[in-house]
Length: 224
Image (tube, rainbow, N blue to C red; front, side, top):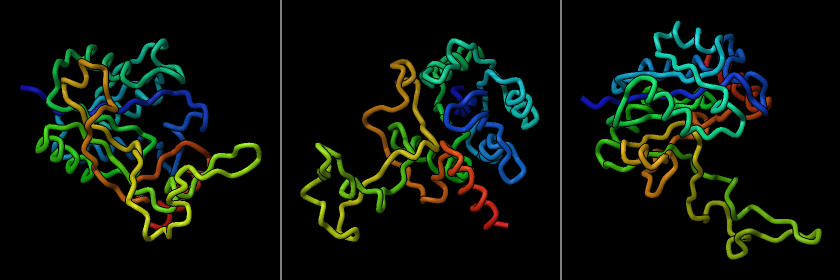
């Protein structure tokens, strides 16, 4: 029977934040938050961590997750995540999963409820799912190019529009993607069409910089 498989890609290296997937936040490795959410999901059948780092592999096994050792040639900074996904599925002998749920450990505040709701959305619509967050004041109407030292609005027709009157726009927050066997055969994670699964700004925190880690620490502290 086709399974709903979560894959957590967790390299040991990182450009922006050194060793970020195992950096301690609130006294716990960053990847632990994603492992906890996946384990608490009521809809996932398998949880797989693909990594090139022995310490991350140990953390995953302690969390009762399956581990696939990722070869160095698909564990570089510029390696497409689809390569790690397909390699993990091949190593585990998983063909045509009912759903492939990509959970990046850099989105630590995504919950089990988010995973289950997004899976329900995928199963109900039959369309790949992508988690998103409202643009808010980071709306493109507030953005400019600099040309010859002068600011040029990206959306000149909306440059003077009040924030409250701007059309709602969304950006991918990286917390989760869900695709089926068809997309995997086409080597696609980001595809067209995709159905949005909306998350709020707090749960959409994405760790790319040291400042992001500081923000996460503050959010976790506020919860205690």
